[in-house]
Image (cartoon, rainbow over the protein chains, first blue to last red):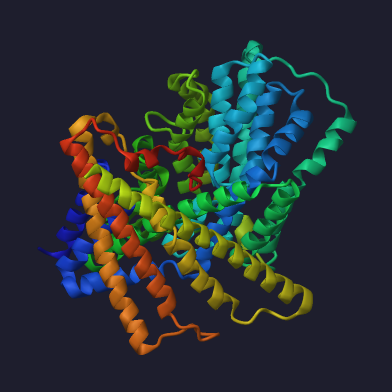
Length: 432
Length: 187
């Protein structure tokens, strides 16, 4: 069998295994190992695969991942979430849909100390949903706001998925983290605008909050100092070239750990935070190992280069191909987990995107945005599942219905990302 | 058979948990090294020599010691759209299939990593700045893969047992029902 056919067969087997429920890490490693053995023989195939676990763990640029993950887990015990929600409520509670708007702002604040959209959704389902219900908010709107607010975590640094993208495609993690900031803030503002429009059309969905004095507003600010410290260290440190992403993650982890200890975090909570951090780290690295083995196999087949040549030689404008890729990701996002979807498609899609002349950093941001749309669209919208999982009295259909108005906002955000790439790239390009 | 499986599980689980806790402590140690480097470099104009070497070797420990603990909680990303619709023997057949693929992969990786360890042991590879021997990290990765292989084999045997006796319940698969929702920060 010629290598190209073997490469295509490999992709077919990989998709089949994933659909059959084999974990992405094992499905991609299995296909890669079998392909390498078929192409180069058992000794070389096993030898090449066996190098991957150590080589793709003991690597300085990868060390940012466990630290970013630890920040997210420790932040819960440092009281950042409650403080962020309290401050946001006092500052924007009087606006139309005030508590919903506060939830979006607080989600953005939580995103600044966590790279986890499902974690953010889980936290605010417990924290903000009962508050909104108590004030007479429509449950569908409240659930939708929380699910969509969770997606901010993937773009606003620290973002684990942007780091993984950077590692897989060998792009600067520092530039990617900076590039995520503006689209993250833009998404936040668009979600707030959607809330205002929806509530203006139907004021019964969200009653107005009581007035808060300036003294109360100012008193709420020290509680969010941890969030500002982490944002300052990560973005400032990277932007001004003072620290590598790993160093900024290390310092930010130390700050959040200090805050958690100040809040008298128990040893048991610290231990469970460490276990959760390690479990998630191991899960991510096993996928990285599997995909790296698969990427090696694909490189031997020459398939990525062949696909790139075929795509470039298509007699259509490049934006048509990009549109096709966007639609493909949106459809895949409906049924596939975001990390799996990114890891499985990047080995083939990324060379084609670069071949078409698109910027790799810009594409990383677009891809993460598409993945995040996937976590709030049916039938497999993970964030919506989280809301429904914690609050089974709110049906899944209601959560998806609550998300619908925000999807119109998402179309606007995607259009801005495509039409104004400089908006994403100017921060990383200015990096010292 | 059920009691044999749960005895092995009872032996494995604490080992995996302690390994994961050690990995967590090493991650915190890594944080300290990184902070010391930043403070030393910016505050005292005195960078910490070889910090990159140390962080890299720590990373092997942080990642490797958690893989078996992660698998014991079925923490690996998978698409469950199809498998969630199955029940009884069909469900356990699907689990056994996925686990047998996993077992094959981990066996190959353990063998390949062991060969990598032997090369590093014999040829004496080391890190560029401090000259730390690489074989230690590779050995830890190989041993962790071996532990993962034992865990996955146990899960495979349990899935096969449940195929034969689907109504008898399982302590091993109950690990999967911990709250995975909040421990999924990759998206």
